[in-house]
Length: 112
Figure 1: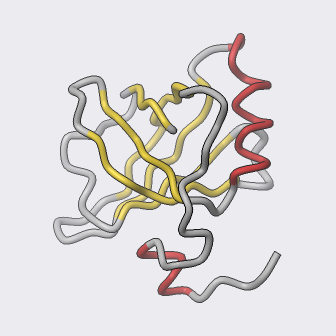
Figure 2: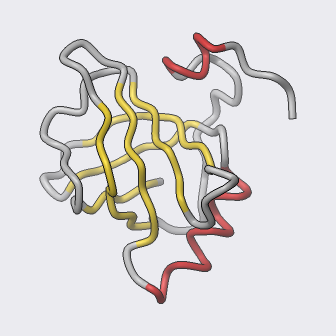
Figure 3: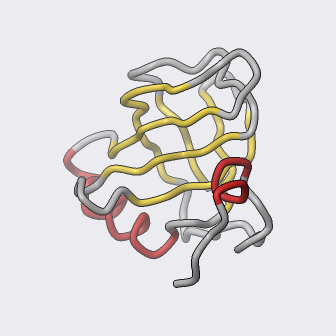
């Protein structure tokens, strides 16, 4: 895997610009939100329940660094980039170039 420039990491960049295309839409739970009033933002996420833990972990391993689409229950959607946190099994970090307004811990996101 090639090195990613810090700016590309923070704002999404152009590496891997094609959307990740999982076989199905996955639901994830937001664990923590890191946001400022001007962006960028980060969302620490994990599986929704034990039944989806392994599926999410496998999907995350094969899609780390890719651009995704996230949808809130309110149907608001946004594009982001997802990364696997290698030292934390089943944890992902979603990076968004804008403030994470209206997203809180325990929210459920659908990712595509």
